[in-house]
Image (cartoon, rainbow, N blue to C red; front, side, top):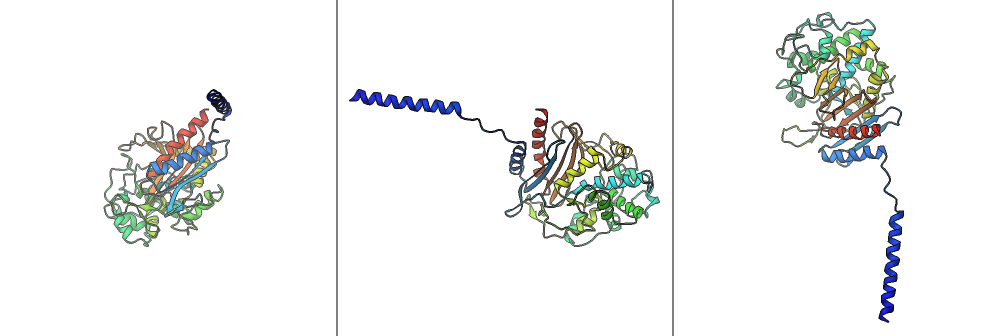
Length: 382
C-alpha cells in the first residue's frame, strides 16, 4: 500500500513538473511598452521624484503622432489637464522677438533703431540703446525684477495694473555697463520693447500676436492677459510667498500686477501643446520668419558670463548648454513666473519640438524633460 502511495505521489509530482515546464515554455514575455506609455510613466514618476505639483508636456516627433501628457494636480485632488493654461514666464520673449523681426521684414523698424527713435527718455536708460541690444540683452539696463522692492510691491497690490512707464521709472536702477559692452539678462529691455512695438504698430500687442501667430498656427490656447481675458481653465500656481520652503496656492491673487509689470518680458499664458506648435512653426517648419530674419535671431552672443546653463543668447532665443540637456543641442526659450515655469524647445539634430509647463514657482517638475529626452533619443536611434 505504501509503495502504491509513493508511486501515486511521484506520478502527481511528475505531472505537476511537466505542466509547470510546459507553462513556462509557453509564457509570453510582457509586452513592450509603447512610446506613449514610456512617456507617461516618466511623467508620473517625475512629478514624484522632482517634488513638483503638476506638469504638462507636449512632444512632436516628425513623422509620428504628437504626444500630450499630464501628471500631478492643479490643486487639492483636481488633476492637471491638457487644456489648462499655465503662465509661460520669459518664454514670452521668443514671441516678442518674432513680432519684432516680422515688423523688420515689413520695413516698419530696423534692429539698429535707437530708443530715442520711438519712445521717451527715462532715468538710467541710455537712449542710444538699439532694438537689437534690447532683444539680446547687451543693453546694460538694470533688470527691474532684481529691484529689492519690486516683489513686495507686486504682491501687496495684486490687482494693480502697472504701466510700462511706471515699471521703468520705479524699478530700474543704474545700468550694469554701457550699451554693447557686455551681457546681462534684463526684463526691463523687453518692457521697453513692448512700448516700441505699440508705437510702431499703433495697435495692441495682443491683437498683433494673435493675428500674426496664434490664429494662423492654430494656437487656440495662448493669451496675453494684460489685454485679454483668460477663458480658463487655469492651473493653480504654487509659490513660496514667505520664503519658508513651503508652497502656497496663489490662485486667489489677481494676475494683473505681475502680467502688467512683466509685459513682453513674461506675461503670456499658454498650454504645452501650443508651446510645442510654436517651436515647430518657428524653428522646424520656418513659417514664422524668413530665412534672413531667422538667421539674425540665431546669432548668439557667447560666451554668457555667470550663466553656465546658457551657451549663447540670440534675439529672444536661448542656445542651451549641452550640460543641461543630456549633451543635446537645444534652442528655444524657457521661463518662470510666480507659481509657474514653462519652456518651448527645439532639437535641431532630430527635428523634435517640446512644450512643457509646470505649476510650481521653482519649476521642479521640469526636471522630467531630461527623462523624456532619454526616451526620445533611444526611440529615434533604434
